[in-house]
Image 1 (cartoon, rainbow, N blue to C red):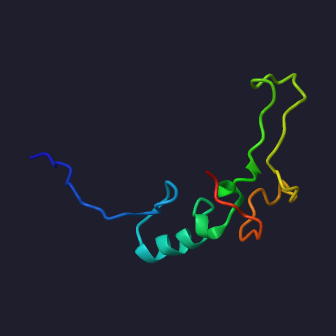
Image 2 (tube, rainbow, N blue to C red):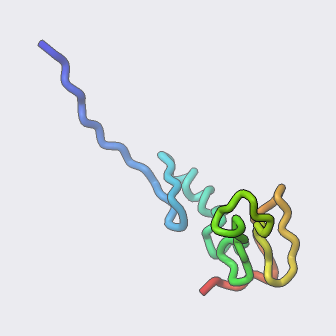
Length: 94
């Protein structure tokens, strides 16, 4: 007699703002409270003033015109902290 796989149902809880899922409802709620895509967190990624930058001229490695993320209001965005949260000047992206 050969063994067959057993089907099991699993419950996962997903963040409504991003793709992340967790097996615990509590852990998912904790993630949602800090999720960069949650408008209540007021993070750069959901701000009207956020510019994600570009990789230059269509990805040409010889191009020198690439730019990193920036804020149109001049708020500095540094590589060590690419997404700020709780910004006083945050505006909902349209």
